[in-house]
Length: 294
Image (cartoon, rainbow, N blue to C red; front, side):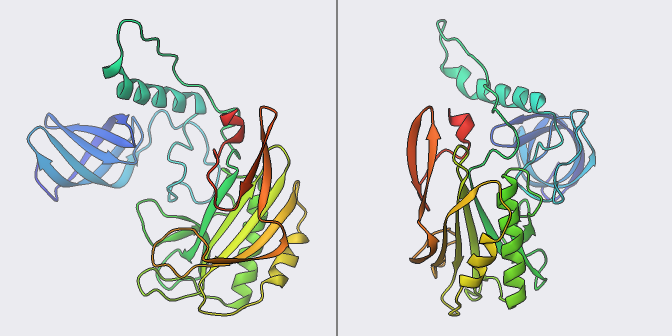
């Protein structure tokens, strides 16, 4: 085995974080983002005595673990849900093995390993999402959603993303349609030009309050009141706590605001955990799985 070789192999197991292990010629080859049992094709990037690393090129045969249908339109291209087609019970077994392997070197004879506690829901559990504006292909139509796996620049429109509540998917769709009507261009991280950057959405699991922030550069001066009005006309299960337009001209690919204008409502929501109320502002940290945090 040598650098740049293209090889095939079966993924034997996956170490944290998503370090899939294939054995070739007695060597341990680490290839990220594959599932145990998959037959994959990969390119060797590095090789050292007894071990190597590679880049996944394609999945030749699916794993016996992959018995579920895909839940959204952009799987498996999107990097958000690698194990989407694996039953949740099997996902928990994989995670249990990874956690045990990480912690077991520090166990003693009195240690009790309790394993993994399942999330109350494996779907629509995220109370916050940061969506990016971009293109699926270079110079292609404007997109809004999540990055293609292993890509810094390609963005896939995530209107069917099952990680978030349907309210947030409706907001994403309405926002994308509005921006496309205005013929706005996405911010380009190489040239540092363009207008549209991010859409940040929060939704309280317990109260149903929704907070939305559209982040743009200062390249243009646009009044987003009509966009906010369009959002308020959506039929949602929850209700809007606030709708905000913020500016960010920083070069870093980081969702933040250098200034912000509240178009409607306020800039925070309330979430409840175990009878306690938490006031969550736009950019503050909070556990993204409210029911799981409880």
